[in-house]
Image (cartoon, rainbow, N blue to C red):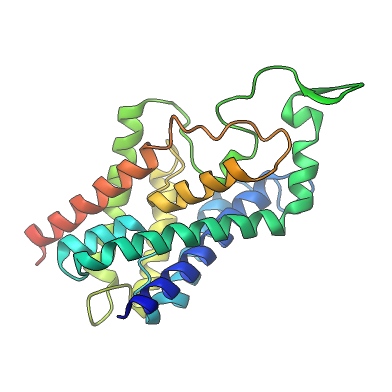
Length: 263
């Protein structure tokens, strides 16, 4: 694959992945959305279909890694050149940020309605406008649309959860999902990967929201921090290391385990 193939495929594929994945989170979360309160099943299947769409869009161009953990796992397994890894990761991060911006554009009116509702953001009206009743929380009221967060904040447990969930994902890709060249996700592999993502969400997603992809969390979290959203609260940067470190370690472990047990 050429450098331009990797850049184009990973940027577009990851953008679509985050557009559809973040989109289902927005649909379930935001005021005045027809899908509001649709629940965890909608989110898990929405993310599965997001992976499926992104993988099929990018599979024939870049191999559809769409995830630094997959790229690292493939590099350790031997299907991807280490020299290509920085380009994969940079393209994935750019695509994730573009996808998050598109979610904001699609739900622009709903974001405004949600974040100016006093019952949601905990504000009161004064002659000077809307003011916070308390200091902005670590995680703002729409941060979950952009990035993940734990139900119980315990750094060790949270990172272990992400390591295990990501190792399952990457090991499934390496054993069942690769194309004929062994450097990315194949046609059948895209479907398998999407179903595995749904399964991970249903079974292992409860503690942390199953980032299982560093750029899926980091790119949209950066966008959340930069967007001019009223009353958006904090971006919870104190937790941001977990969905970066956990998936990268999980991807590396999966690549090593594959070489030990399956190669």
